[in-house]
Amino acid sequence: MTERFLTGITTTGTTHLGNYVGAIRPSVVASRTAGVESFFFLADYHALIKCDDPERVARSRMEIAAAWLAAGLDIERATFYRQSDVPEVTELTWLLNCVTPKGLMNRAHAYKAATDVNRAAGGELDDGVSMGLYAYPILMAADILLFKATKVPVGRDQVQHIEMARDIAQRFNHQFGRGRALLVLPEAQVDESLATLPGLDGRKMSKSYDNVIPLFAGGAKGLREGVARIVTDSRLPGEPKHTEGVALVAIHDAFATPAQREAFRADLRAGLGWGDAKERVVRLVDAELAPLRERHAELLAQPQRIEDALQAGAAKARRRCAPLIAELRDAVGLRAVRAPASSPRSAPGGGAAPATFKQFREADGRFRFKLVDGDGTLLLDSEAFDDARAAGQWVKRLKHEGPGALGDAPVALAPGVEHARVVQVLADLAALAAGAADA
Ligand code: TRP
Image (tube, rainbow, N blue to C red):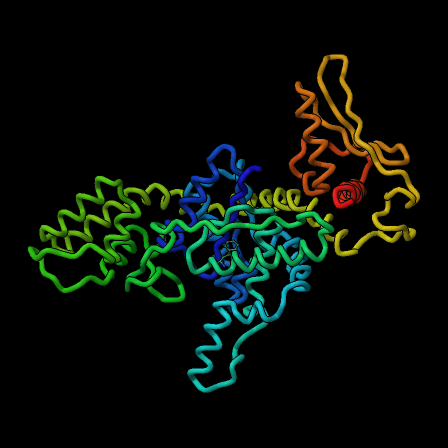
């Protein structure tokens, strides 16, 4: 199965070095890697949980989008979008809300942190807790499950949310899957060395700790001022320095080659002063960021280019998730009204004959298949394959995985056939196949 990477950045502020190192830079690499699919998005619904300043949310969406594009995200290959441009996210959130136990959300870190503060202050436990904050992990699960992500690169603080997404997906599959894995269980991918860049005070660099170094804001000067404020100990130039667990060293390392890392440590141990060390960090980081900063400024001067990229990305994202949403709606019973039939509807004795796949060889020697409904309507046409086995394997996947395989399969809808009908037929076939396997 192809790996699918997915990650989001909450749009509540300007981007900082931690976002760049932990999310933006690795995602740019992933977007350029052949053989993996990747999804990157601006988590602007998440922003509303923490931020009630509309201007700030709007500005942040634009700046973070520009940062991602300036860093070189390959938006032809990857799918890059704003969460709120994909209404299927909120639709799936609701379906997941209905299978998620309230008790699971009681354990979420963000909620517990809020109640801990209230408890310490002697107030009502739920003071200031909105339903958005409380159910935040369900929205995040929807982000991930909607695109069948297999790998979610995140900071350590987010690992619990990925585990909750797995838990919720399992419950959903159990309840509605009739033996099929409708939702794919994701895994967190934490790069220990990078995912939690320390901030000015040594804690994780984070907007909520107010310890960030801006990525582009303030230009090269902003960077220099930021680095100057990194807390170091009071050892003087000439005195040997510790290099373990030192924020300045970790920030240096995130931009350095192995040889540069070694040299920096050796020089600090030999007495390099913190002031000179900081100057070196500024030069190193700026060498990587200066060209990006320029592109970022260009993009902000032409917001329409950003908007166009995001609109195209949203359309692509919606195409990608449409088959799954249709399948899920069907699975929970949100179906078109039709005469009741035994379930599954095309089961033997249930009335209509089941749809069938037909494989054939063309005059040019190549292989194709089609899906034909019980009433003879042509539903799907495949591409031509050189190899009969490749065609056969797609037929097998479509039969067993149902509409879940539709997004990947090299097939086209027959003219005039509605997508929803094909989804329905494939869901029935998969249910039949699962039934046959059980029997
Ligand atoms: N909650 C994440 C954060 O604050 C952002 C986010 C939202 C996310 N949805 C996601 C990250 C889905 C990974 C996958 O950092």
